[in-house]
Length: 143
Image 1 (cartoon, rainbow, N blue to C red):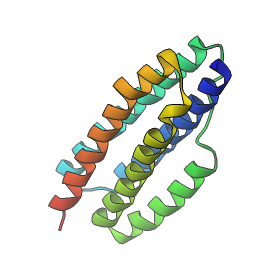
Image 2: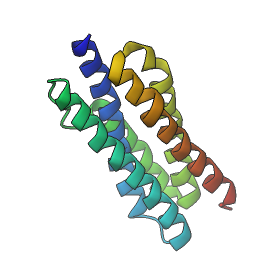
Image 3: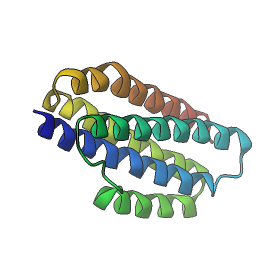
Image 4: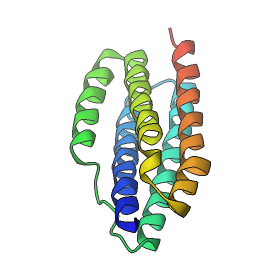
């Protein structure tokens, strides 16, 4: 079970690393201070989840993923196009990434066991829901 937990947590970790990379890219192209502040809050939430996942994977005897993998490359391409189109498109692209992250946690929760499942159910999934909701609200305020 620990091996399955490590694989699943590493999948979540790659998604979180991708989110961190994408938020950093988007923040660099946002001029509105209020929007930038909201995006920085989301970035910090994802960075915290990266740290939490790395710690848990190591505790289970696994090796944390070092990068975001193919999803990170795809996300950066989407975000680069959105950055070119403006802040609203950039936030919309980030929200789609949040949708993907939320779906990953919900879909793969049952692949975890014991303490790993508790971590996902009680900490990571609720945190992802909060980040998703924050970005959805932000998107509605941009004209």
